[in-house]
Length: 80
Image (cartoon, rainbow, N blue to C red; front, top):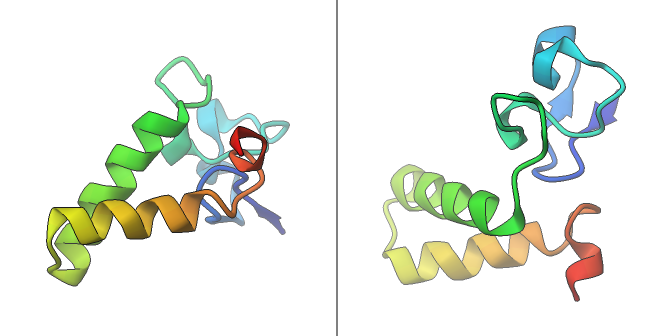
């Protein structure tokens, strides 16, 4: 089973891949409509919003938590 390098989601079905392209190492949620991978800032914003909503926390807490989560993933390790 592949894991998305940008968000960590398990990719278990062809529908999990952008444009159904199983050669990609990132999931459909981390891709633009054209299949290219989103930037760190785009994912950071999305994960921040999801975390704040799902855990009912302040945006500042969600932003810091999202940063900590994302920086551990393979796609973003080279940023540091």
